[in-house]
Amino acid sequence: MNILLVCVGGISTSILEKNIRDAFGPEKANWVVEAHPVDQLESLIDRFDVILLGPQIRHKFRAVKKVADSNSKPCEVIDSRDYALAKGDKVLKRAEELLS
Image 1 (cartoon, rainbow, N blue to C red):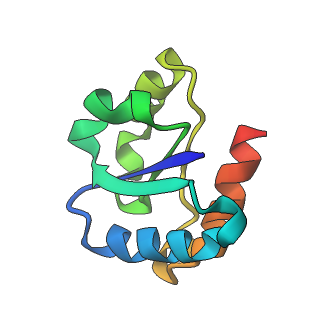
Image 2 (spheres, one colour):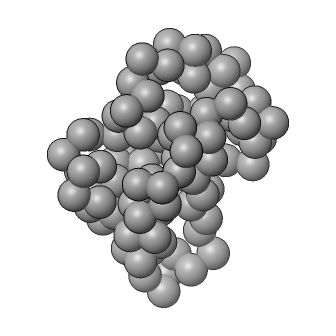
């Protein structure tokens, strides 16, 4: 699975990205998670299976969802508590649920 985290600048999202990667474990060693600015979404979307937005750009959800839907990719805003606490395991579980 390839997870795209979209955000504004990537500082706080990079912490979450690391924690998600740490939650992969050996059975998911080939999975990918990357954080990128939202304005790069259209050029990157083909490489990813699920799109998760940082809660600080919740206001861009409709535009991101439109791009995600046109590429048949699930998309959701990350729970603000999980984001603030960088709970990589919870965000990873939600990404898996979105794909199933």
